[in-house]
Image (tube, rainbow, N blue to C red; front, top):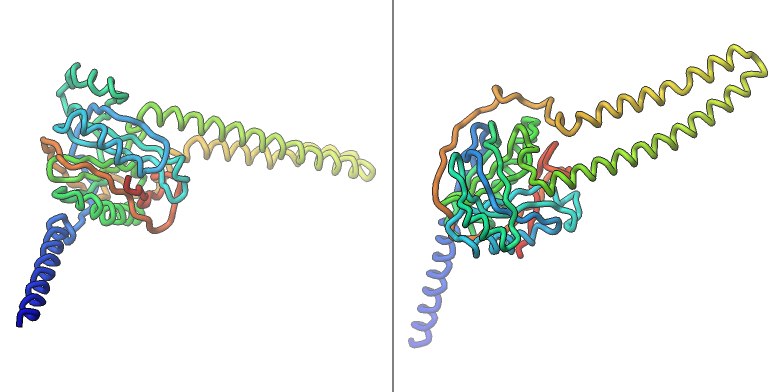
Length: 321
């Protein structure tokens, strides 16, 4: 009988443990419905202290910890610019920090100096006019893992179905909620200075490479044209003149059209999508306070891939620190 009683107690303890774990997961948001909408953002203009990194998204956890160690009462923010499925981990770009002030409020000089002392930089984001957004409960550390695995796929589906241009991916940890925000307009305003400089260098390098390729193509085209002209001269001088004049034009015209497309493709990648009026706009409310927990999880992998969030953003993946 003693053995049976002992086994019964062990079984009861196991059941209680499983129920406790299940309750914890449910409380963390396991069955929370993810609702994605487009409308006014849950936050206004803000000033933040941040650190910019180029590398695996797994490094973001340490940056969140760095910010929290300086001031635990402020809200955390993460801005992710690249899709790690197509951009190698060591080239992914992101900014992590703390929100110093929102709206008309100004950060104190003491706060600014304290963050700058530990290598943080200060930058301000304007209030976005329209965004694609979703929220998720922020009740336990597990909430972060559940959020990135459930919210980002929902955002991807919403953005892809409506062919929207919504980027970068911004996560704001405020009170007991995680806000996922993707600006629909003026996305460049949410690029920190380091990101803007990298984009400028990237475009300059791409332009140089394109010019070099065009020069090589142009030499080959002219060589072929000259050869054809010389052969045609033996039959007809008029044919030679016409050939030497007309053949280079298609390549030149193609270059002009390519240049025009490259100038506008970045900002117009979502131009064929829905307008703001066609979307179901909803207004989110502001909240005050700050989380006491730190985000360390990352985006799950799924669906088709692109280098950035610009055209058809998909879920990214940040490994745990």
